Amino acid sequence: MIDYIKGTVAELTPTRVVLDNSGIGYRMEISLQTYESLEGKSEATVFIHHHFREDIEQYYGFATKDERELFELIISVSGIGVNSARMMLSSFSAEELRQAIIGEDVNKIKSVKGIGLKSAQRMVLELKDKIMKGEGASSEVLFKASNSEATEEATRALTMLGFNKTNISKAVQAILKKDPNAKVEDIIKQALKMM
Image 1 (cartoon, rainbow, N blue to C red):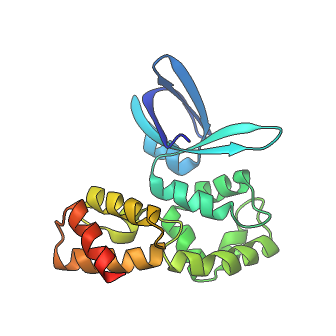
Image 2: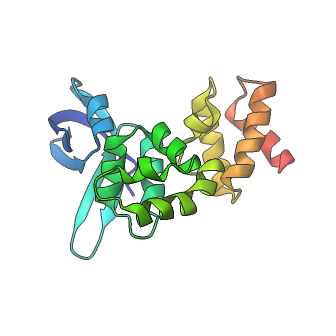
Image 3: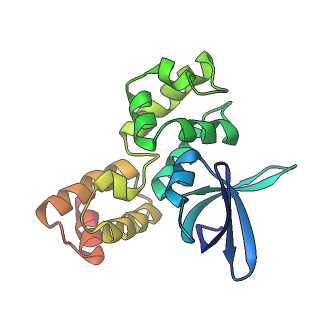
């Protein structure tokens, strides 16, 4: 699976980017958030969601892992597809959308083109608890730590060991409170003792 593509911005529109990497142009559908992040850049790194159905194969690109995580959480809701999720992330920032879901602001959610009352209610119902537990956010956003690279790597390792994000989040936050500059291996060792 492709995690990200790094390359030269060959084409950029408010809905699409083409990145040239070693002579191959990768076309990705993007949100306005990503467009604003990439505007004016000649080189970029874009995080990928590979959408595959029997009749179509597309890449969706995101300027941040956080936006991609939320996109993937949104499309997990029954009846909400990739285009509606992209429209939501074009209408709101990732944080605004999370707050609307947590605050059960159905009117704000249904103000997005293509999202009706029932879809907005379903989103709140299915995603509120998940978002409050830290799903749909990258580790950098969850922890807001000074050494986010170490935090990200430790979180990935603990996730692969089978621990859930809620427990990982609590353990890593406690560790970083004591030592904000903890190394990856120290975070993992201490977290394993706590879980």
